[in-house]
Length: 142
Image (cartoon, rainbow, N blue to C red; front, side):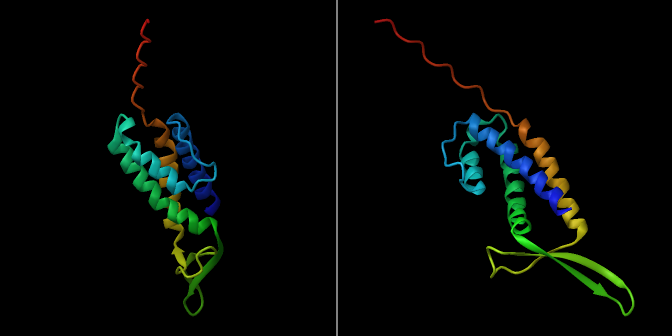
């Protein structure tokens, strides 16, 4: 399930990168994904539906924090037992890059929902429409 979420998020990253190319974003290839999202937000007036862009970027930002924790952590399985049987279980992720950050604990249902959200965004994001570029002014005859 963790891999499915990361795969879905990778498709979001690809869609965002495609728009950065179309917007002629000049940044280091290794720029942080959050910086790329900020650039898209700053370029919102170049989109036909900037409110949809804002909503989608806000959803991506939330998922990006979760992606970071899931991608940079060893998986811990947390199990709650009754005297004789398993009652419930969760997945724990301790981000190796942020050791002082508390363990992120998710249920399988939460991870499934995150994956569905990422898949939905990966499908929707490429449908953002850019406004038509203004035609270049004709050269004057001199």
